[in-house]
Length: 459
Image 1 (tube, rainbow, N blue to C red):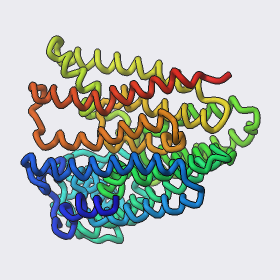
Image 2: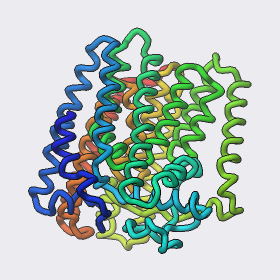
Image 3: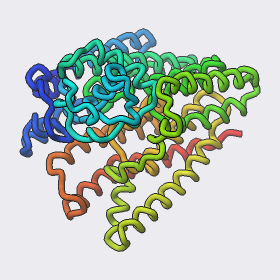
């Protein structure tokens, strides 16, 4: 894998050779070439990495526990290798750097003030897209990322490397936590813990998105896994404070809140005083984290801001079909209500499964996040699968893990869509969205459904 990463991704996308941002949503298209050959320069290494990833997972489940060191060491090597790669799959990292500068340099609230408010800032020329929009993250992100931007100065390369190094550190810490959690969840089965470390730390999609593109989902997921680790290892008072830290980076992991709460309530060995203490500490964390950003009712403007509608999701495909028969607003309402209602039903099924041991907790958590990605994440991007990865990894050897493997592989290949980037709702657009919906969502959903049917809820 190391050789493929070096030759396939790092060498053609080297940061030291591309020291300016490019005006494109996926700059990799411009860097690798806009022709079919350029698409192949991405696809061939991606397919090779995915094949090696599957082999590594299969082998990891058969080795002795001491091989976990090699699994984690490989993750470290891969993450460090990708640090000097230009983040060619996103513009988010550049906006994140600008947000950190807004808070730490200008004392502005990034959830209320967009980067465009300071066009004379030294980093502003490196921004492309969404410069007039404020950020949509929680306060914990700015408290962590701001000092990194302050240390990196004004240059693009230094700031990108600093952000990517921070994400790589959280990614690697997550790999260790996943291994530690799986070890406790499956005592007597050391191969599961090693497979779990490989499932996260060697995943081509996660390597591309976190140490590669520098997405801050690495921070959110680290704290979410820490909360799961606390639950599995019976550190009850830490569960909800850690989950709160995760949600204070990005709000999506609130999906795990009801899962953990019901799972804890249904266990007779969880002291109620510990549960109350943890929830109280979580509430205090919210107050402390929001204090520097408090602006009255405007503090929660981000929660009221309209979403980005539809992209790369089954809902986007369904909305496109419905728009051929219904007026646009009606098609939107039907799509939102239909997929939203189905999500609520399946999320309820996941909550019913949140009981008994650690494996059931991981299954319920996986199901909750999976049905959200499948149905309610109308604005979908491949790196959102970062949220699912550690839950799948803790279920090594099960169909839920292979559901994630299939989904992550197909999601990585969705970057090929940006080479033709077909006009909205043309025949080419529908062809691409049919492939994306089938590969990233329908086929994994079928595999997940078989797992749901064959592992009945335990009383």
